[in-house]
Length: 460
Ligand SMILES: Cc1ncc(COP(=O)(O)O)c(C=O)c1O
View 1 (cartoon, protein in one colour):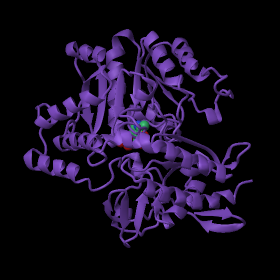
View 2 (cartoon, helix red, strand yellow):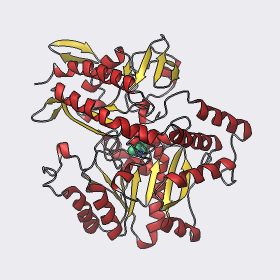
View 3 (tube, protein in one colour):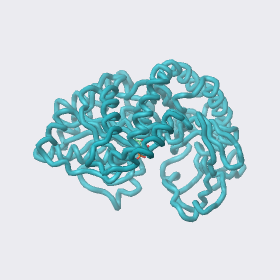
C-alpha cells in the first residue's frame, strides 16, 4: 500500500503488519481486512506493560492490545489460579455447579450495580451482547416489544444480533447479506461532530431527548443498548446529562436499558463500571475483556431482578457448551482479586489528570489532531487533515478497500520507536494497561508526540 506524503510515495502497512509470511498467514484468517498482504509480527514474549517480537525487539503497549490486557502480562496470581483450576476441573458441563462459579458470582455481586442479581457467563463480548438482545426479546415477547435501539458509530460484536446493533461500518459492510428487521439506530452524543449541528450545553442534550422521540414514533421498542463511553469509534464521553436522561426515558417507556461495558468495565474509566460515573443503574450490563484481564476468554451478561424473576417462570432459551467454563471463571475470580489488591480504581483516578493533560498537550502541539477525548486511562486522538473543517484523513470506505490510513502511518512510526498504539480508521486508541507507571506512560506519550509530526506535515 502506498500513500503520497509531501509529494513522496511512502509504503504503509497496518501496525502489526511488519512481520513475515508464515504458515499462519497462509492457513488462518486475518480479521477485519483483506487477506492479501497480511504479514503479522510474531510475538514471542510479554511481561507487564511490554511485549517482545521474534527479533527480540521490545514494545511498550499503549493500548492494552485490544483494550483488554488491563492487568498487563504475566500476572502470576492469575496464571496460578488458571493452572490450579486446570488441575482441579478444566471443564464440566454448565448444568453442574462448581466452586469457582460460586466464587465468581459472589465476587461480582460486590462490584456490580446492586440491582443486577443474575449472571450469564460466556466467552466474548459478542456473546454477552447476543445474550442481552435475546433476553430482552424473550422478556418482552408477550408485549410484542422486540425492536432494539442502538447508536450509530458503535460496536457491539461481530455476529447475528450483536452486529445488527453495531452502528459503525462493520455492520454496514454486511448489511446486504445479514440485515434483519427490528434494529434501529440513533445519533450519538458526539459533540465534536454533533449530528444535529448543535453545541453543548445550549443543545440541552437534544440527542438524549431524540431517544424518546424514536421510542414513541417507532413503537414496539423493547430495549436500548449503548456503550456508556463509545470505545473503538473514538472514546466518545457523553455530556453528564446524557446517560441519566436516556436511562430515565427508558424507564418511563418501559424499555430495557443495556450498558455495553465490554471495553469500559473493570477500571478502564477509573471505576468498576463507567455507568457509575453518572450514577446510572442499567437493567442489563454486558462486559468481557477486562473481566479476566484477557487471561481467559470470559464475558458476562448481568440482568436485574425483574428480568431474572421473569425467567423463574419462563424458559431461558439460551446457552453454550463453554458457558461458565471453569478455567475462564477462575481467571475472572483472580483478576477481580488483583484489581482490588493493586487498588486499580484508585491508581487510575490518581493518574487520570496526568493522562488527560498529556492528551490535551498533544492536541495543542499538533495541527493534525482534531480532537482528543478521555476518561480515566481511556483516550482517543482523532486525526484530521483540516482542523477548521474537521476533515478526516480517511474514510471507512478506504479502510474496507485496504487503502493506507494516516493512523496506521503514525502508529507505524510509534512502533519503530518501540510503542504499540491500536488504531481504528481516524482514531488512535490510548488505553494502556492500568498497572502502567507514570514513567512508562510518559515514554508512550513522547513516542506518540514524535510520530504525529508525520500527520502534521500532511495538514492543509
Ligand atoms: C463495546 C464493545 N462491545 C462488544 C465488543 C465485542 O467483544 P468481543 O470482541 O470480545 O466479541 C467489543 C469489542 O471490541 C466492544 O468494544
